[in-house]
Amino acid sequence: MRKESQQLTPEQQQILEDFIKEFLPPRGNKRKNSGNELEYLAPTLDALFRKHFGFAVTFDDVLAAFERLNYTIFTKGGDWDWDKKDFKPSDKGEGTKILGIRGQLVHTYENNNAAFIYIDVDAPKVRDLRRTRTTLVPTTSPEKVEEQQRLLRHIDAFEKRYKE
View (cartoon, rainbow, N blue to C red):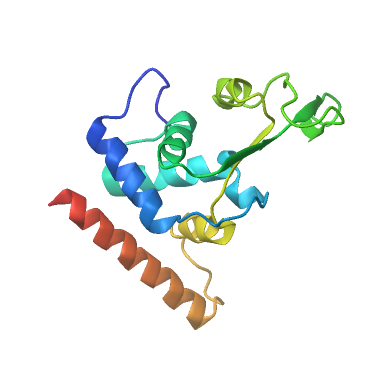
């Protein structure tokens, strides 16, 4: 991911927002899933944007884009378990101040006073986008292979609209 001090250009912000609208429509509920958590979603979008558009997006870029598009963003508080080196659910309720989190996530999560930040998108769609970065195993069903190929063609068509 890109350094936090760099900003996306207005054109890059527009591409990110248009991509979100086209590939990740709002789901309409507040389901918490690892696939729609910012820590999973942002690196997925970052990898896609590096590959297809030649620029990187940060956690803050992704969160800000969803906010500008008025997506529902919800958080879950948590406490750091020093023994397990992981977050555990907080008994203090939503919005518990966290002690820290991995790498560049520290300020994003601290600014939102949360251990987990979820975006109201369909987690399986995020996982499908993430899978486009890898090669499927030979035993993958023909339906799954065709589904991935269809998504890749859709991404390529989206990319061409912005490269022309």
